[in-house]
Length: 106
Image 1 (cartoon, rainbow, N blue to C red):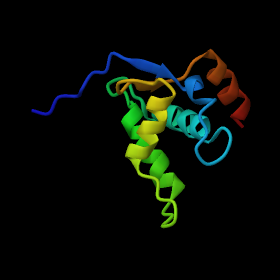
Image 2 (cartoon, rainbow, N blue to C red; image 1 turned 90 degrees about the horizontal axis):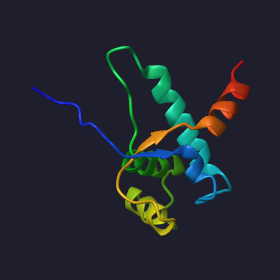
Image 3 (cartoon, one colour; image 1 turned 120 degrees about the horizontal axis):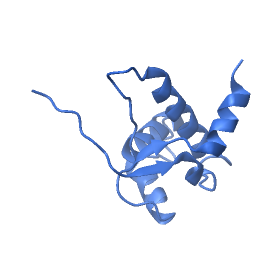
Image 4 (spheres, one colour; image 1 turned 60 degrees about the horizontal axis):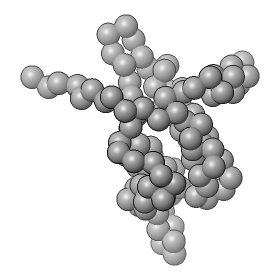
């Protein structure tokens, strides 16, 4: 029987606003997109969650292949660590992000 892993630590996606890898706001925009996508996938019996490691992996995939300057998920995790982010918390929208996403809805 496969059990879902429960994460106790959470990190607000607004914590990624000051982290820049490729262009200003790149990590924050991806974190908001992923958190909103998770929300859209949620049902009454299933909650989709993305961890910090998942965000790093997604970022390196979105960044694409650059043979001159490769970016692996481990590199992204090291950037997160250099900004004081520890562990493997789950992404969470906060009030500020809620306002952003409300304004984006069509």
